[in-house]
Amino acid sequence: MGEVEKIYKQVLLYDFYGELLTKHQQSVYEDAVYNDMSLSEIAEEQGISRQGVHDLIKRCDKILQGYEDKLHLVQKFTEAKEKLVKITELTQELLEKELPGEVKESIESIKEVSTDLWKDF
Figure 1 (cartoon, helix red, strand yellow):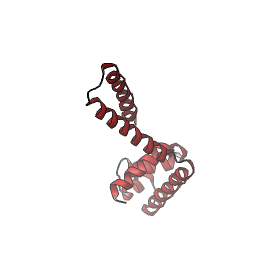
Figure 2 (spheres, one colour; figure 1 turned 135 degrees about the horizontal axis):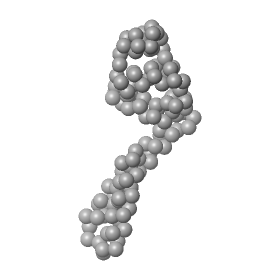
Figure 3 (cartoon, helix red, strand yellow; figure 1 turned 180 degrees about the vertical axis):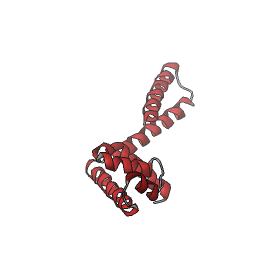
Figure 4 (tube, helix red, strand yellow; figure 1 turned 120 degrees about the horizontal axis):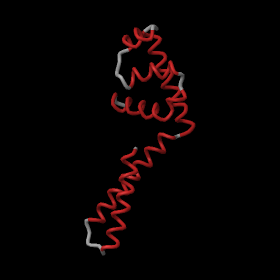
């Protein structure tokens, strides 16, 4: 897994389960993942060692992944988003065909709803 994919996964896991971490864990994890701070910068800001920051981030990753392993919310979210994108693509393909007006209007409505849903993600 590349660095970008790792960060994306961390962001998703934190978005879903971050509130279940302690405030201290949240602060350190947000600095590392969202604010792209170095371990040294976080250590100085938090008054702990660089190794302590490293260990805390690893522990948070493990905790967050543990929640995902049990609840699968990120997996379900990702699958739902992919399906909504597919519905939008399929409705667009249908709209490009010759269709009766009322059918076209219904398909346009379906496309609007699916587009609105996946843009909210």
